[in-house]
Length: 319
Image 1 (tube, rainbow, N blue to C red):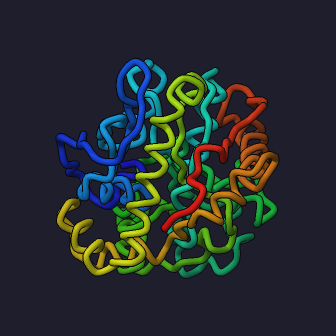
Image 2: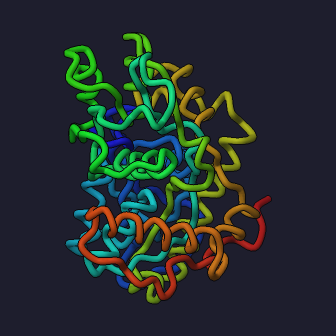
């Protein structure tokens, strides 16, 4: 299971709804989305008819479906992690980040056996990781902090959903994972040694559109971003209502939604303006991350970002 599936496996159908005004060229903007707490503002916007007819959400069960839709041309944009965006760039698909939805602040975790007390103790250990997912990026950052390389450990490449079983069998000494797997391993005697709060502003979730969409459907892209901020405003100002809407949609407990919210930072308009500025934090981090991914063989080529982010689609203000 990829990280962005962990909140639940069911997705509401029929997500196109009329709402805020906007314009469209050659049909509505087809936007891929899948379950993740950082993407909930768009689902909330749909609930309240704040998502205009210029934008149609195309649900999938994971980021993989959205990435395939972008690669095939079936989608104009999608909600992805920054590393997933880089992976598509490295394959020749130019994407533009138009908003940052969340920044991991503890959602991604390194679970270890009690005998492992320091990051340097990871040398020679068997570490469960989903190499082609965001946990693969987390592992690289952990090894960087430990002063180790991939050759210093034994990677056990498994979907995160299989980490707890591997732990119980004694097949691994550590796991790079996220909830609910992290809590399951903790209940089985695992210890949290490191999490994404130790590497702030590294793991981002973003809204991206193709270069062609950014150029030809500017009104629809603005409508998409405005809908995100409308949903975010409701999430922040009406937390109780929002938590129960998310819980009902995902078929999980309200406490699980609150726990998920506690592990991410949801950037407001001012933070987005800072992140998306030309040569700003997001582009700086993306270049550093792409070099790291390329050096470790996670991507075949290091993409050259002429312009990764575009703040021009952000609203002038959020009421």
